[in-house]
Image (cartoon, rainbow, N blue to C red):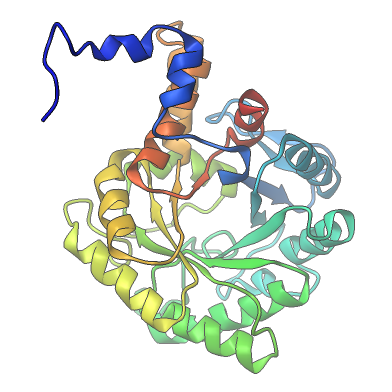
Length: 327
C-alpha cells in the first residue's frame, strides 16, 4: 500500500537537480560506452562521412588520435571497421596480416595496451567486391557453410594482431561455433566473442554503408539478417549463439528494438550490448542542425533508454562526447 495525494507527492523528489540525481534509477557511465571507428586504407587524411556529421573514415594516424581521446574520456571500448583499398570475391583483405584492420589493431595494441577494450567487427561485407557478408555460390546466393571457414580465419588474424574481443556480425548460422573452434585451435582460447546475435535487416543502416563502403552490389541482406517483425526469433538466435560459445551478445539496431533488448536482457546471463546505429545517430544530428531538438539532451536520453532497457554496453558514435559530458 502507498499513500495517495495529497500526502503522496512524487514531485518532491524531482524538485532539484541534486534530488533527481540522488534517486535516479538508471545511470550511464563512460565505461558503458563503445566507440565504433572506421579506418580506411589508401587515404592520407581523415575523410568525413557526409551522412554522419562528425564521423570520419580514419587514417591509421588519425585513428590512433581518436583512440587516445576515447581513453582520456573514459570510454570502455572501441569497435573497429576496416575499409580496404582493394576488394575481391573472397574478401581477402579481411584476414590478410597486412590488411588495414590488422595494421590498426597492432597500432592500438602498441599504443594502448589494456587501457581500453579493443574490438573488431568480424564480417566480409566491407571486404568483398559484391558487398555481401559471405562467400557466394555460382547462382549468387550467400554460401553459409563456406563462409564459416572465412570467419574463423578472420578471427585468428585479428587475434594475432592484438584484438581483445572479436565481434561477428554476419548472421551466418553456426558462426560463433566456427569462430570459437578456430580461435581455440590457434591457441587464442582467451579471446571473447561478442556476437551480433539479434541483428535485424534494418533501414537504419543506410549511413553506415557510406562509412564502411559495404552496400550490397545486388539484392539485400534479408535472407540472413532478421525480419523486423519477429521477436521470438531473436531469442532463438541469442540462445544458439550462447550455446555455441558467445561470451556477450548484441541487439542491433537499438532504438527501434528496445523491446528486444528488454527480452534478451531478461533471458540471458551474459552481458548484453545494444548498437545505436548510424541512422539513429544521423536522425538526431539532422534534427539538431535544424533546431528541432536539444542535441545534448537527446543524446543522453537515448543512451539512458538503452541502459534502462537492460543493455550493459552501448555502441554509439557519440561515445567520446557522451563520456566527457558524463564526467
